[in-house]
Amino acid sequence: MTTNTNLSVADRAAGALMGAFIGDALALGPHWYYDLDELHARYGEWISDYTAPMSDHYHAGMKAGESSQAGLLLRLTLESLAACGGYDEADFCRCMDEDFFPHIDGVPMHGPGGYTSQSIREAWRKRVQQGLPWGQVAGNADTTEAAERTLALAVRYALDPSALADAVTRNTLLTQTDGTVVAMTVAFGAVLGMLVEGHALDASISAKLMARVKAGALPFHTVTVGNLQAPKPGAAEAPTLGRFPSPDALLTPSAIARAALDPDIRIEPAWKVSLVYGMPCAVYHQFQPAYYLAARFAGDFESAVLHAVNGGGQNLARAMLTGALVGAQVGIDGIPQRFIEGLEEREWLLALVRGVAAEAAGA
Image (cartoon, one colour):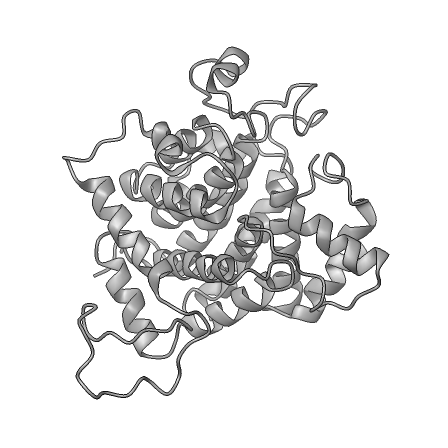
């Protein structure tokens, strides 16, 4: 069963991509406030629109509605997809070498977007300072940095789960090598791809993902049968064991969606999901609240993304990932127009997003 049957794949794809840009920009000002009292003192009890960063905080000097470095890397990925008609790893690496790395210097509080993440700093040092080739510049950062740009690949290949998993895996490995990070990043991409197809983020989504594992479309290892039942005695493992050691990252979304819709489980206000799952940057603190907010507010883009922003901590990644998931469910026209109007370079972003979304629908 699918949802949003009145929306086209192109509508959902465009909604996912614009949702990510909007989530990123909404959190630019109040990014990385782990003291919620300080966050409220500076931005009020509820942040409802784009804000400028404070002069003594992250991203200082940037304007309300601008993209952080995560948004700029998402844009670079989309531009490469648009230029090549699909994922071309050589072109993506060329864009990084020619269009991005010359503007950073390995210092955290510097570079386009006002801050350079750990994995990008490490890739720059190995690539630029040490002269290592792509394929040897990744580090073990445990953040969602790769997920924030590979969501473009998940959207582009939403109708081809095998190609989606391959592209997301290969691109993630350019900057991050930790196996759990890669598995969770690919799983997030697989979930996003299903939402772009039109599936619901509900208790059944993990079973659908597992069916794709069984069919060989997703590279996760599993020995169970059916609905995670025990394998038959003496049965051999599947010929293809999968790149990732377990399917657990695919099982998480259904459990969280079930909790989000269970009347006996309430997180009130919803922004406190950041306190439940944790406020730091690591993937195991970020994907879960994004799934929760996207399931709870499946048809309400504004509520989902603003609760992600108001949760503090690494709210930029939380809002960016949530924006993609909910944008895929409501489509481009389900995003409040004021959020689109408030984005810097909105016309260029809209044109870029719609172009890649059209290619995704025609894949």
